[in-house]
Image 1: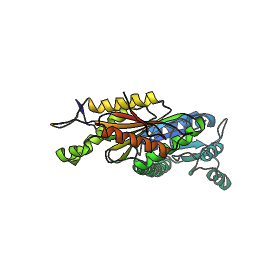
Image 2: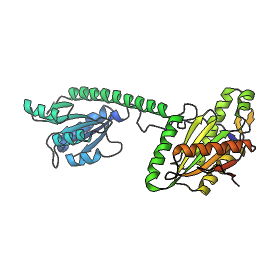
Image 3: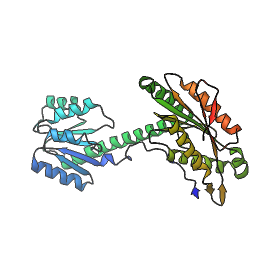
Image 4: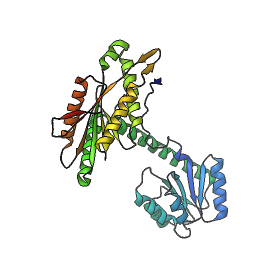
Length: 332
């Protein structure tokens, strides 16, 4: 038997605060000075990446997990530190990268030029080891705060677009995504499959086993639905015990096959919650729509009508409906 599993929210793709702040890029063409810097930083617990010219440093910064703390020498072959600073700031990439510009130039105008190029700190060579350590800690604190803010922003964005119980798209988000798919296919003329899914006799689950058990059943239903779908198909909680599924670029047979797999995924195995074994079935109304001939509202209305027919015909079945027609044909 399949046991109910709680869905976890999709990761935001952000690293945990502190991970990125612990990596440092040293761009320095002097081999001895580069070696000294590296030994200091590794002794302080930083993960160090090195480059012996500005061009190599720029390539490293294109990588997915590039360091966020940068120590750049002003004078380097191929690309100097000031030009590299300007490239980094023009890119305007999030998350922010904290730059220490190191140079033997100590003229006031040079310091101003370096800071205006985008450096956060300016260190004159030879610089004090303890001062470098303190400046790096300052940079790490700033990056830590940034990471926490970005993580909070992504969590708020997730909460605004996802159902808090099932982890699927919420009603507003799935409608927006459906509208987007119709807009995209209006140019290509491809068809879109829609399914409206309703859990049969769900009130009995709540009445018999309680609302917490009902919540667990809904989570498990969402998990089983997502297991059947393609990676780019969309599923959202339409409301209560109903789900809306959007299948881009599908024909009628593909939508019907998917709907039957979802129906069987529920009917073939009860949901196990502790000592309870709760049988679950779903009714499915499905349509295939072409955005050149129908709107998303037309498709939703047709899928909803097909779902109504499925429930009135005995439940635990798939019924297909046509857009702009009242003829509904039960699937085989």
